[in-house]
Image 1 (cartoon, helix red, strand yellow):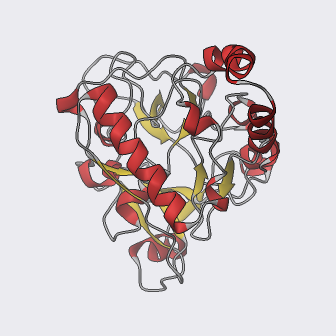
Image 2: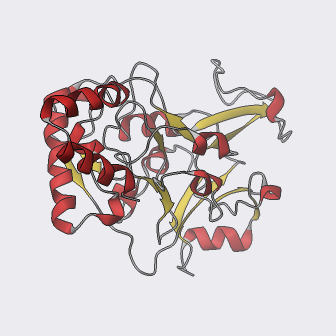
Image 3: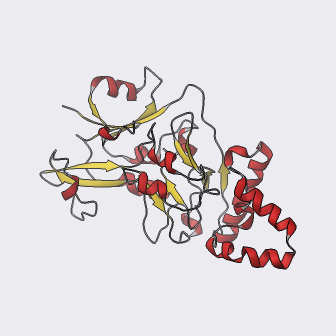
Amino acid sequence: MTTRRTALKVLGATLGATAWAEAMAPLRKWTQDLSFDAFLQKHYKELSAVERQQVIERHQRETKAEYGAEVTIADPQAQAGVSFGYALNLSICIGCRSCAEACHEENNHDRATHNSYIRVFEMNDRSMDFEHATVDYDHPVPAPGKFYMPVQCHQCDNAPCVRVCPVEATWKEPDGIVVVDYDWCIGCRYCEAACPYHARRFNWHKPEISADEINPNQGLLSNRVRPQGVVEKCTFCLHRTREGRLPACQEVCPTGARVFGNLLDADSELRWVLENKRVFVLKEDLGTKPRFFYFFDE
């Protein structure tokens, strides 16, 4: 995993300062929103505790310098005995998109594009006809004869996005969350093409977000402000959920349609839903083994 950066370090030691700068010029242009220290950084999994803290402190300084915001970046780890899952009650989702808005704000998305990790599809009642569904409806909801289906990262156990990444910048954590090392991602977008749920987002431009809109409570592998040229995704708000809080999208749902929890906890509401409701997963035939479930009351 360190071949690229190790080779560059050796090259830098071999060339003189001027020759090194000239050789790196094209790479600097390609990584225009990525500091050179970040480009030479080790993969997340290879960082020692001290190195990881240095990376966190660098990102905090860079956020202050680039956005004028004081932020605290944590790096909560997966907990033993926890395997996260999510369920969504389609019988009571009203398509208000409060979840998408909360995701937008919690995860420090680009304000100009109003990006979110959640898309809410409006379809004819119980049709599941995605071909004729829309995500840009602008009328009052819920509309007669319609039902709504939010789609986001399904945190697949057999994740196509993980398999296709050529530099191992994305992987599944022990608690089931698929994460991205944003300092290691090369922006090839293979993961975006492989995902059957359109759950990956590519940062075409440096995110535009004012200091007063930045969420200062951030996670190294989750909602810190991502640089231009990388692919990002939902992480079940791991900076919240690994510390015992709910995902932002569930916290704001006005109808209680969202159920998040530990799949290994036999007494959790999530397990009760999976054992007592009509549950299904999206695109089951693809064998991705999602941790995101849908159900109806009746």
